[in-house]
Image (cartoon, helix red, strand yellow):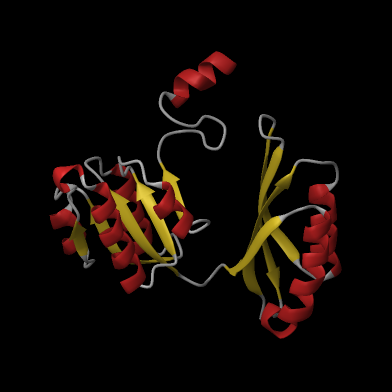
Length: 212
């Protein structure tokens, strides 16, 4: 029985990246079902997400990974392969705007997204009721006397205790410290209305308009 996997990677932009990657997957009997890529001209970086099916990656994981690592080294690639059906233990952080949180709760409930929500963290109590109504633990972490260091320490400890594999900032309107970000490097994403990675920061629509 075929299983679905997702390959995500980034590397310096150059010719032949997608061709070499697709050829490798084809040579290993993988069937590609979805390919998304983005070339950032400003940073000269290439990003890609490839969904593919394979009879049994578990049985050939060692050789498959080692062979792909050769290609990845050639392209200076940072990469990861995950089982698409495996639910990722996810901790959500939110502030006062709930549209991103509500979307995640809905998608998790109706199995539209392979995540296992292990809790919700917020610096406000605005969404305590709806989070607990959906059966998830709500953690209120206010910033007292502007002491963000202590608040982030508690945030980190909650994530560790919940065995979170991913932290999703769903309109969490706080700038995280470099220390916190480094601890969760590659395991923390920010979702909001910007067109990342092209238009970072505030006023993304203004940036897009000015570039057009």
